[in-house]
Image (cartoon, rainbow, N blue to C red; front, side, top):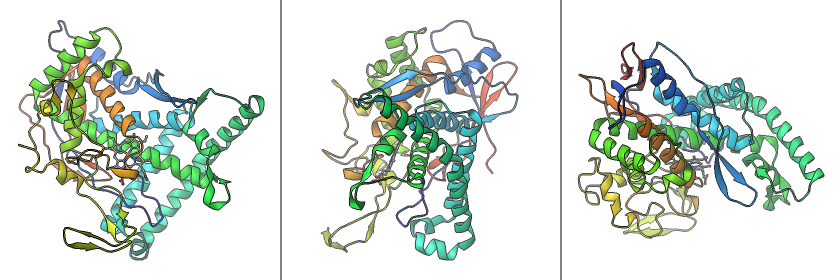
Length: 421
Ligand code: HEM
């Protein structure tokens, strides 16, 4: 979800975490089984060797493979969500700046974002009412403001370099139609209400920070929930594997165009979005005029929110709502469900209306891409004798209460869940 800032408009949203033992074995139907080192290497490779979204000047969006071949060998269990979140940070920073940043800078930016969100979450319900929150939690608020200063000091040099580069390219070729990045589009933005002025660095830093938070935690939470469900529901995992394998085979890389050919993959992602939406509320909205709804008066400017989590789990709308049944999203013609709210609202993980998540397509694409690659390359299982703990924990998004961990072992590669804190 969107990064809470220190303006009155922002809020931080709830989240949850998981604990289980999971081992990776050969995909169904495959023979042989790589050694632990090979599997270990592949695991990290799959996480970090990822496609990056590249938006062209004509508005088209393409994925090009830009590898993050950051193979890590570790004998310690590694929290899966942390690795995934880092991979998302790499992706999103590339999207923002149009270039692969130095790893140290990526980690620094991530560290500041994480600290900021943690502080904001600590405000609890007062994050919804920043004016009050500022007053009651003065010290925490000062810390948040300080973190934002540090954040600006890290982002500002990057913004400066990008701005100079942009100006140089424009001078040399005013009709330049090459690759653009998010930051370049921000440089071109004009604030009409304020005489067409351009955005200042602090505003650009805020918008970049918003994308990082909105795009990393949401996707990470959803990924962890879907993987946990696939571990619990082996038949569904096998079906997903065979449908994915049927389209791409075992040797080829799964590309964006391939994802379109795997309706079952889309159904699995939709199922995850329905019963484990990363945020159980949207950002606060308000009505512009007094409105009467079902005999209730909603006064002008009153804050309004929606119980997104409850909607997707409503037994009046969804039979056996917590059952993992991706089939219910499929009909003879493929995937059948409207998640934008334009026809009906049975679930709204991305919200609806004019403030609907602006990167709904990108979020779904990331999820499908990672899941397809994960399931095509490995079989994910609980380590014998353990089960997945599906309790929820509220953070910035709804995470698993016990962290899912990847745990290298001499015999084979395993995942275990961390002991709940
Ligand atoms: C599974 C993935 C995602 C989910 C479930 C999700 C969900 C949401 C929701 C519920 C909102 C609030 C809308 C409202 O208040 O009405 C939102 C806003 C937003 N999301 Fe996403 N999102 C996802 C991925 C992403 C990604 C990948 C990006 C960026 C790369 C992104 C960028 C944003 C931004 C910038 C906003 C704020 C829009 C505004 O202020 O009007 N989201 N998202």
